[in-house]
Image (cartoon, rainbow, N blue to C red; front, side, top):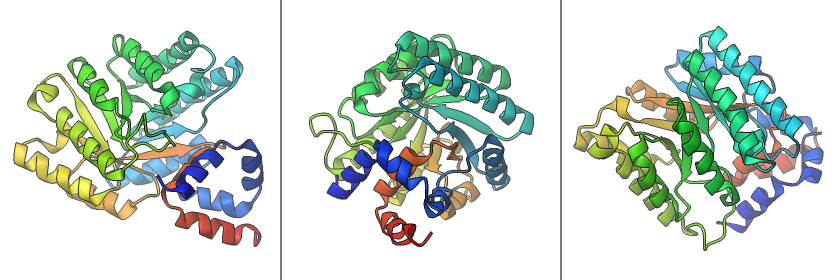
Length: 310
């Protein structure tokens, strides 16, 4: 991982810089490249537009690492409201959430209860819930919460990060449960004793995990992989692999972030693949925005060059 990317990821946790950055109109405008808006209504408008172009979505109310039960309850209530809004609007979208936003760092049982409310209401609306994966200090507890909920609900899935050494074992253990998983590379700054430091190894592990979930055994168990990548080499590999193995386009999907490679998203959808865009919204956009800058530091230069022109 480059020094600049590591720095930007660390800065994503800085409340001092957050207060500074969000005060500039140019940074708020730039965030709209990656964030659908600050309100649910704005997000639904974006989702509707994507659906009309044949692209599925999953909505995420931005926020993480809450410090009180009241904050966690408020976050859960926003998701319950979002579920009603999605159902009433008729758009095709799931929801994604982070467990630290639901109170994982406060009390795991309390967090699980908040998420269970969301999954229960989502089930009534016919909506799927994805539990996002965060930094490695939360990995094991996130999987524990997912396993507990999966025993009660079939409309809940998880995300797994290919840069973690442990991910292969995690996937192998969960395959018999019928794992619906978002496979991604990972966007946090992890030490080399926990995560692959070399991008080539991260990419190779992403391919290995995808292959595991596309085996006949895994598909018979009900596994459904969502390959979350903007890397055309990996996407091309997947297209060739499923064609060679006779795997239908309905047995997996590609996932990408809203605002990143929109032309590629459209091309894949036009080719008949299931494509899902991750659509975040809310006023707590700063950490998410900084992680997107870390993935493409050239955007940082543009931001810095325009901050004091605003």
